[in-house]
Amino acid sequence: MKGDTLILFARAPRLGTVKRRLARETGDMAALRFHRGQVARLIRRLGHDRRWRFILAGTPDGARWHPGVAPHPQGRGDLGERMARALGRHRRAVLIGSDIPALDATDIAAAFRALGRADAVFGPSEDGGYWLVGFGPRRPEAPFARVRWSSEHALADTLANFSCHRVALLRRLRDVDTASDLRELRRQR
Image (cartoon, rainbow, N blue to C red):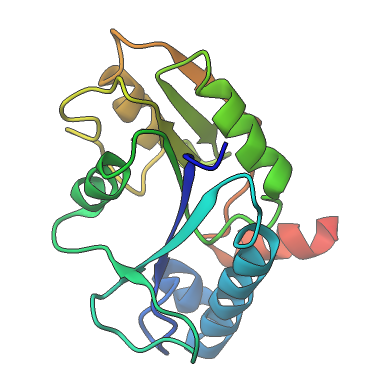
């Protein structure tokens, strides 16, 4: 349904500012190459699908991207505040990060289908976080309150804010945060 919105949250591709945990182990250039490739791949795979409106939400605000790429600003605040604001602008929206290589259009379509019967949908990641979050019109006032970001508790902390809401879970995927995640990705390919 075209009223659905897919939001890709991404950091501007600048050396030394992207995938910092990965960069500590692989170097800034390797982390930048991975990040650039992932963002480009997701835009190609998901950005022109007619089933939803696609928005690239970039940070920092006002950063220069590739020619032809005009991201919407994420604005100020911590990750939860920025995500809540981006999702809150739409009746039904799904937000994804840029570091999930196995993510494809079938996952996004499944998320929007889940929002037909649930108030929220999450795509759990293997590290205890999540690679996707989506909301329908019924959502908590503070959906990301007290979340311990970048920890194995991120999904559980967020789900605690949805105790009075119907929640759907999608398949578990691996995000790439470390060199071992990147090695596992290459081994699977």
